[in-house]
Length: 188
Image (cartoon, rainbow, N blue to C red; front, side, top):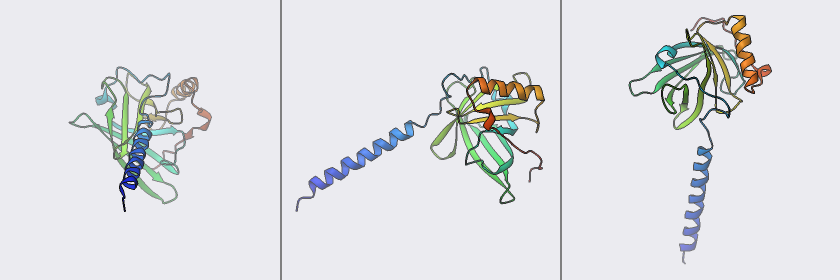
């Protein structure tokens, strides 16, 4: 019995599936959404440290979390350690994820890709920033479905909040869908 035709068909099928998988991964963009420009100049040293998540668009990986924070720390190899932490209201316990971020180009431009799951990266782009004190930032992902407002303190002055909301609206984000994150617990 000649199995050669069956073997050739199986190899072509495998090669096709591999190609589709690679094309699917290539479609996972880490670039900022069209029309959005990451902050330049950007100073990672000033951005390092703890940030409180004050507002976000809803996503399953953060659903049900309050008191969310992110801590960024530059590494010797040029990458950035990312520690995301939040309180799970249903489980009544803290959850934490550690990831790695890489600049997508020049480190002077606030455009990075972040991974919490091995080789899979998502875009992380600072599009608004308090350039004087690095006290607040507006961050977007690879599409207008991802938006975060971060600050060094657990609250923003009303004028800064309104300015960021206006900017996000002008950039095409659904600011009415933002979740304002409760920040009342001490880190546990």
